Image 1: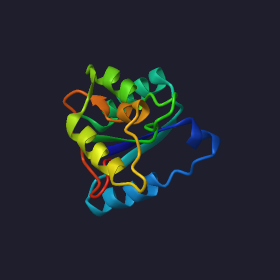
Image 2 (image 1 turned 90 degrees about the vertical axis):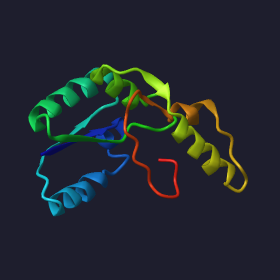
Image 3 (image 1 turned 180 degrees about the vertical axis):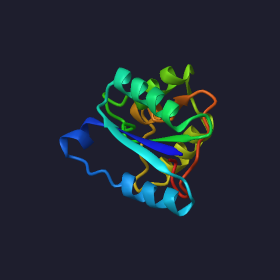
Image 4 (image 1 turned 30 degrees about the horizontal axis):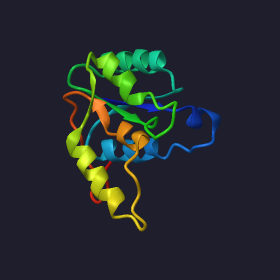
Length: 138
């Protein structure tokens, strides 16, 4: 079983279209995984944490909860912090992700600064498993 938690005020306001649900639903279905619930929550730590806990209980110990959204270089991006808190983990700079970010932004024309907001996006819950998209830092 699997569930999807979509995080972001932008999705709820309609300023960003959720394209991840249909993509993930098709991928999971083709692999024999039942997507049992999809929920959209605002950029609110308590709401994210409470919903994550409920979805984890629903899919059970062998299930998966995917998250989408809420991780950009803006002031309201609380996803990593909320997930870390809900999982009883701390946030820490993930050095392999930071190294990929350095390479990615240095290769831009012109090269871009690896500023505090970008480094914040590489600050992840401790002991997390990071899956990368080839050619990107994410």
